[in-house]
Amino acid sequence: MANTISVVIPFFKRQKIFDETIQSVFAQTLKPLEIIVVDDCSGGDAIEFLKQYEPQITIIALEKNVGVSKARNIGVKAAKGEYIAFLDSDDYWSVDKLEKQYNYMQNHPEVSLTHTGCRVFYPDQTEKTYIKKPLNLLFTHLIKNSHVTPPSVMIKKQVFEDIGGFDPTFRQTEDYELSMRLITQGHLIHFIPEALTHVRLGTNDKISSNWKGFFKGHVGVVQRYKKNYVNEIGILGYYYCIVNYIEKTGYKQGKIFGKLLILIARILKLILPKPALFN
Image 1 (tube, one colour):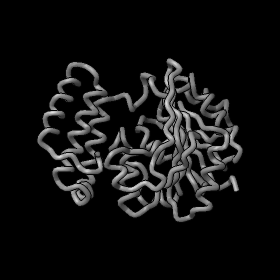
Image 2 (cartoon, rainbow, N blue to C red):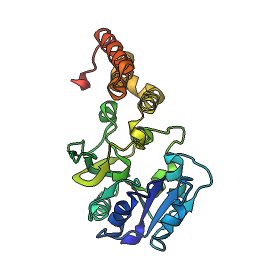
Image 3 (cartoon, rainbow, N blue to C red):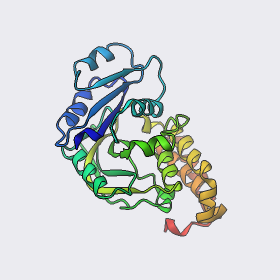
Image 4 (cartoon, rainbow, N blue to C red):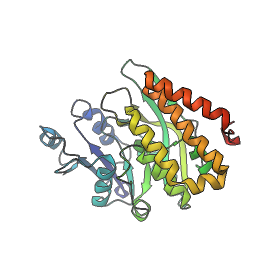
């Protein structure tokens, strides 16, 4: 049963916290077939550091930095399992995460991807838990929020390959774009409402802390799926969504320029009608 799951972990200079990540995979009640760690050209002692976990892991050492999307795609290409479970090198899983997802997907063969609830924790010991998400993800849900967090994902390998994997042109929000592509192509994404994935935030190297990347990525997703947005909420609704991300970027930037973005967005929201699904 366990030999149908391949775990793929992109790695970049995470030596200080990686042990907690990999030990959470070793401790799974349902052991995976393989654990593939893709080192994205970390340099230094990264490969020697990772070798301590052999032969329990397979290391793919990249000669140049390609970004998390392509690193994951390379890992999946080398994988032998029927299912792929992604994990980031600074996060970790509850011990029964793989077992619960695998059982769910066996009982629901029509589902292409499952994701779990998350506990997000910060360096100051504060934390938040996210277990209230749509059980069956729809395009209307994605208009408001990306919902799917990569380290919580288990996906059928064949589906991942058929749709082309993560788009490497998205250095950020690649998860959002992948979810959009799956949904708009008719695939089912289901949610397991248990906090089985533990996500570390607040570190300086976290990609999601980049406000420029946040704006470029989210607006890029909206623009790519413009036709779907317009069909669902009209052209003004489409522009409202872009303005909404301008406002969110302002909060994320947090300085004078961020306050200016918030002001601009609020003025534009006085002109644009708010789509009903945002109420």
